[in-house]
Length: 171
Image (cartoon, rainbow, N blue to C red; front, side, top):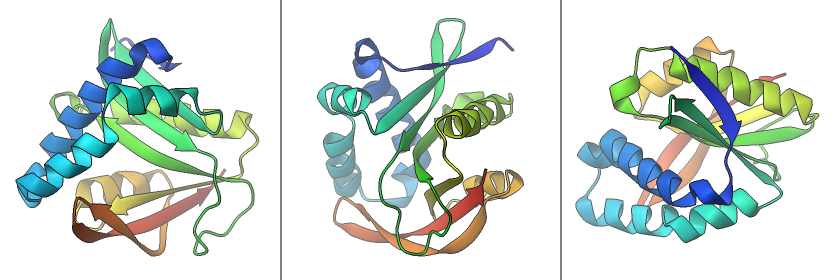
């Protein structure tokens, strides 16, 4: 495996938008309505939105590349965490997507190691994330990385109000 992780640039916006929409749909379409999925994907995965996120100084997007192929990405956002997140200098892992065709290759571990290293170097001491309560595979993965469940928060997918588990870990 020759995975390397690098920070996204605006030149990556179109590829990142297509990749994010494809992976999100592959992961969640079977459990949601087509209308809700279309609404969510349209609002969150345009090249213009990805470019704005990449340019945002409070957001870091990391890409995992195998050869010249994007296989995963993560996005960290430095913003005020929900009240249920304790710990100083928190940063959110807002997105953590691995191409389902690449599962089992160690890509998620490589990317998570890079995410946690990036957060440490940036002076963060707490990492948190929201994960859909009906995504046990992701919940297990985060648990293996020392994240613990601290509560719940709402997540709106289209018109469907869902529940995310909030998980944190100290760095």
